[in-house]
Amino acid sequence: MDQAPDQDRTRQWGQDRDSVRRYGGVDGHGDPSGHPDHVQEQARTMLATAVAEARAGLAEGGVPVGAALYGPDGTLLGRGHNRRVQDGDPSLHAEVAAFRAAGRQRDYRGTTMVTTLSPCWLCSGLVRQFGISRVVIGEARTFHGGHDWLARHGVRIVLLDDPGCAAMMRDFIGEHPELWQEDIGVV
Image 1: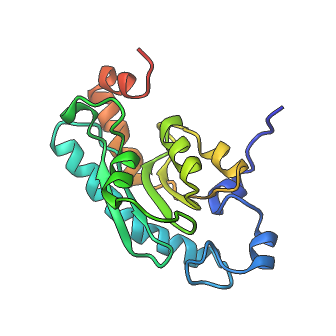
Image 2: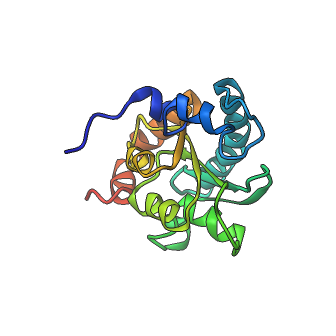
Image 3: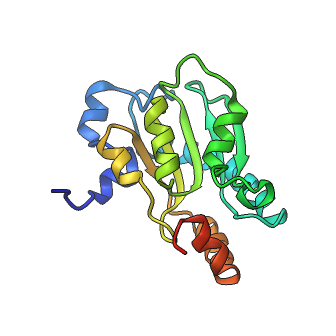
């Protein structure tokens, strides 16, 4: 039976702080102390790329979700936004677009997927399938996807609860409820 998600665990990095201190570092992203302030600062910097993608998608008439995939050293590998409407492709979610833009990687350990919205089951499956180590999430208020499941399976989660991401999605859902329902598979 599933237990209620541990808020502190989900908000920080998907496992307990003692484990991070014991093993050092946070996914090899440069801070051996695993200090949460460093994690939050780095995550917010990365989120800016995903937010720019979400805004581009919205300007094109699509669903405003953006994503970016970063390498273990913090290098941007790929970025993209939800293009379901623009391309007529139901599988072209933001995380998929960023993953495709990154091109083939030999190994995904240590990489970080950054997304403006909690990943759906399709995108959560992509993270698990390829062993992406960490997911940074802008917000999970308007849609609570598979990030708790990812955390239970060892993916480190940083949930930023960004008010700008939440407002962008709330506005979009208010203006386009049918399109939003279609996007999340509830029609």
